[in-house]
Image (cartoon, rainbow, N blue to C red; front, side, top):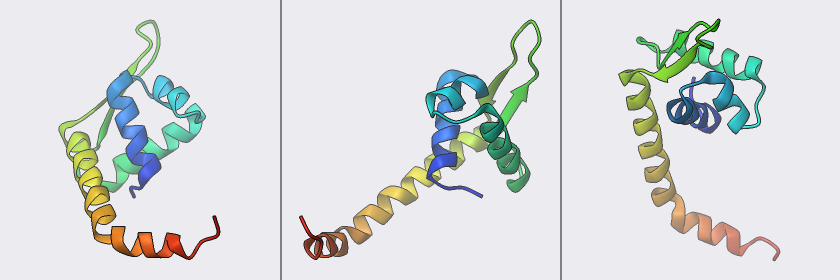
Length: 98
């Protein structure tokens, strides 16, 4: 339902106000971005992204308050995971070839 790519997409939508521009920014096809947003909107109780149709106004996309909360919580989980695994990660890196 959510991973680093989807979190990046949500942040790009928030920055650009457009699903197409967000997809371009991430070097992702529009159809892939659309598919990911549709899946996220179905997965959460409240949709993280609100889309408006194109036409003369060229449409748009924005994060809902739920979408902003999802990104915040996901990034918080990432930071906590990095902190919790930093010691083991240093040891594992020590076993790698240069």
